[in-house]
Structure formats: C-alpha cells, structure tokens
Image (cartoon, rainbow, N blue to C red; front, side, top):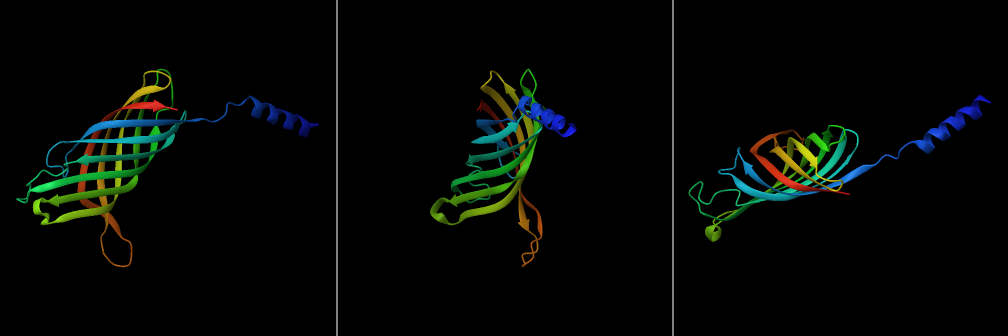
Length: 188
C-alpha cells in the first residue's frame, strides 16, 4: 500500500510541477572599446545570444567587431585598415528572475580574439587568431514581456602558450582591452 501511495504522490507532484523553461535572449548591441591596447576609444557592434532561465545560471554566445581598432600611424606606419573581432562562449550567473524584470549578472568565458591590421602599401599584414578570455557584468531590464535593454562592461585578454614547446602551458598574453555596450534585448 505504501508503494502505491508513494507512486501516486510522485505522479501528482510531477503532473503539477511547472516545466523548466529557459528564455532565449537575443541582444544586438552598440558599444565602445577602450583601455588596454586600444589607442583611443573606438565604436564596436555585435550581438549576444543567451539562454537564461528563472534560476541563476545561463549560457551565452557573444560576438563583436571593432573597426579601426588601431589608430593609423600609432607607431609611425600608416594603416589602411584594422579591426579586432571577438567570439566568446560564456557562463552567466544572474540574479533570479523577479518582477520588475531587472536582472544584474556576471559573465565570463573563453573564445577567439581575431586581430587584423594592414599598412598602406602592404608593408605589413597582421592577421592573427588568439585564444582569449573575457569577464564582465551588466544589467538586463525588461521593458515588456518580450523587449528589454541590456548594459554591459567586459574585459578581454588573449591567452598564449608561454613555453612554445610541445607541452601546453597557457599564460595571459599582453593584448587586452575593455568593452562597454548597450543593446536592445528580445526575449523568446
């Protein structure tokens, strides 16, 4: 009899439990790259795609590009073109979802930092892909059930193999910068 009661109790709990649901948050953004190896503040743009439920953990893919990252002629060589692109996979830790829909969060992860610079007359052509890390935080504010705003500040840094041999010995590299961004968040 106790097995039947237990089975009925478990069935009743499963039938009445709310299904776990994670929201998909798409945020196109516009921002500014500053500090570190950025000679001057530069405009950047990109998008973030996050999977964030009512709990505190979420996942995020973040991609951005900063055109004209390096100023022309910083080291005496005029540049024809330069940019830095980032592609990151992050873990998010956010305040639990509540009403009103304001959620501060922290984010950090790993990915690719792509650096490109071409001098006038093609004296040199830098085209480098580096493993990178980023960490930051921000706030998401829902204006309605489907639309909100998101402000974010992140620090990016490349990672390199410090010994150059067969063993993998990763250290933080010297290339780094900050990014501040503001975007419109669409919730699905």
